[in-house]
Every structure is written in C-alpha cells, then in structure tokens.
Image (cartoon, rainbow, N blue to C red; front, side, top):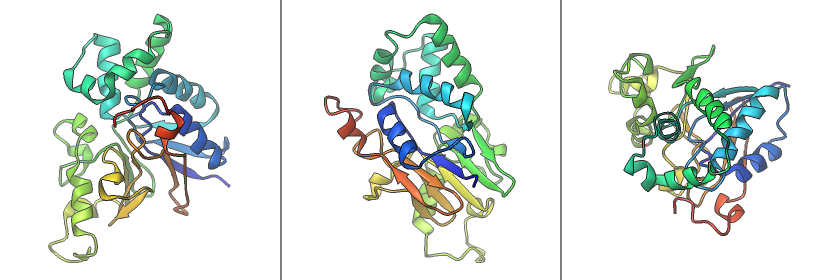
Amino acid sequence: MKRTLVIGDVHGGLKGLKQALKRAEVTVDDQLIFLGDYVDGWSDSAQTIQFLIELEKTHQCEFIYGNHDAWCNDWLSKDLLKPLWLKHGGQATIDSYQNISAEERLLHQEFFNKMKYYIIDDENRLFIHAGFSSLHGPVKEFDQSYCNWDRTLWELAVAVHGKVSPDEISFPKRLNLFHEIYLGHTPTLNWGIEYPWQRMSVWNIDTGAAFKGKVSILDIETKDYWQSDRVMDLYPDEKGRN
C-alpha cells in the first residue's frame, strides 16, 4: 500500500536518516516528502545530500528548501560565508565537503536549486519548512524565502491549541487555510517533546536531530511514526549543534 511519509530535519545526521528509513520499512511505492535542513550539525552534511540525490533516482521524493540548505547553497555557488551560518553548524558542513569533487559540488548546487519552498497536495495539505505570515498563505508571502524562517505559525498553533474553536470568529485565519500543515524548523524539544507533535492542524516533525533529538518520519494518513536513535549517540565523538 502506497504511503506518504514526511521526514523532519536531518542536519547532517545521515546515520539517523538511514536508521529511520529502515525502521519505517520504506519501499519504492512510498512517497517521501522531506521538510528541509539536510545540512549543518553533524559531520555527514555533504554525504547526506549525495545520499538524497541517489535516493531520488529510485524513490518518489519531494524536497523542501530549508534555511540551512540556503546557507549551504550560497557558500557552494557564491562562496558566501555568513557568520550566522558558521555559528549554527556551517563549519561542520564545510568540513564535510573536503573530499567532494568539483563535479559533485555542482550536482549538489543543482539539487538545492530545484527544491521547493512549499508543496500543497490535492487534499489541501501544506508541506513547508518553517511557516508563513501572510493571511492568504505562502503563495502570497512577500518574500518566498521567509517560508524558510517563520516561527510564528507554529508558535500560534501551540498558543491557541485547545483554547479557541475553529468556528469562532477569533480563530486565527492562517490556521484555517489548509486541511493540515506539516513543518519543521522549530525543534519540538523546545517544549520537551521528543516525537512528531500536533497542535491544531499543524504537525511539527522537527524532533531535534541537530541537538539531542532524533530524525523522525510520519505517515500522514495513519499518523504512525518512526524515529532513529538520538543522533548524538550515533556520532559519539561530535558535538553537533549542542
């Protein structure tokens, strides 16, 4: 049976990604939607991108563009070294590219450049890295790259969960635009949650792989989920972004 599986932030933790995919028993019949931030954190950032490029050849994949991916792409394509990027995992990504050929780097740039800021499926479900601020949805966002950064959508869902009914006039309009929203970017660990977490119609699949958490995969129909071990335990000699 074909499944649609959504995968949260990886942050260079390729060992965790492979482990989660194995535990989910992913097959070529499954559709895989990755929510972005494939790099920055653990030592396998370049190797993660290479793995995803190969995975796309055999599986049905969609890749959302994350803010860390944009930073990495700026470095690869424009040699831009943003201090904020280096502070948040960029150096580990740079180090991971030491043995990557110029030809492979170009393939990685092409891979980043074809990623999408968001996807809306036939069931009016939104897949996005971070969120959106426009009351009309991400398509009306003044700057599409803001979809990589917005935290207000998730914070809003957390704040109003269980307090305001969707049919009340005071219910936030942004939360009524889509049947469901799937995002990452803001670790659930910030609330002490270690698994994919739903607030209102929004599902957060970033379970803190960059820090002390895990890589997570969620079946959007059944809401079953699979997780890696804590990624930090798979890279015991590294600090990640901790």
